[in-house]
Length: 217
Image 1 (cartoon, rainbow, N blue to C red):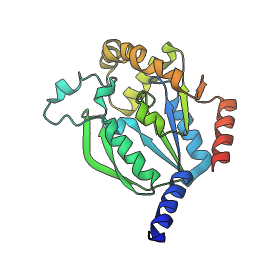
Image 2: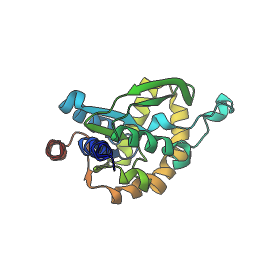
Image 3: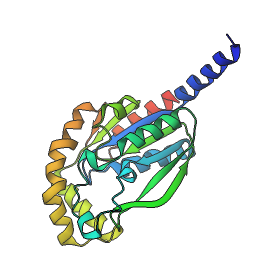
């Protein structure tokens, strides 16, 4: 057998070993983005962040008013198969074209973002720990939790300031889909996490994760 095959296989294995995938889950407004940003700032260009939200399914054939009513907190709203495919490509050292979700129109944009392989990949989203296949790709699984009152207040501020939503719409969506889906699909994934932290600003948890990443690197 050609020795080059062994060399190629060995190179692929090395690429996989050099890539660390970290899942950061938790309810809406729990502090996931804060924790993700802190890790990104600590490791700079060694870290790539992928948001599960960008993998919401296309809904081109549905009118805007109907798209607003879609249950975006159910696992079926996300094209997780594509995310798994992309993470596998990155782990093998191959670049991807990441989709972009447009919150203003409640639909996936026609644009994509080129993402190159990096040493650390952070995958953030409320449901990133809900799919076993996705969890199996992760080296570290983190769940960020927070009081429900704090989460809805943070969500309301974010959606009004960053996504142009009105308060009535935010409240209606929270009561009809966000809250019930949290208890059905998001909170149960806490049991799947390696680390559960009570705040995105938790210094002790951050230092532990930072040290673990440095060790893996």
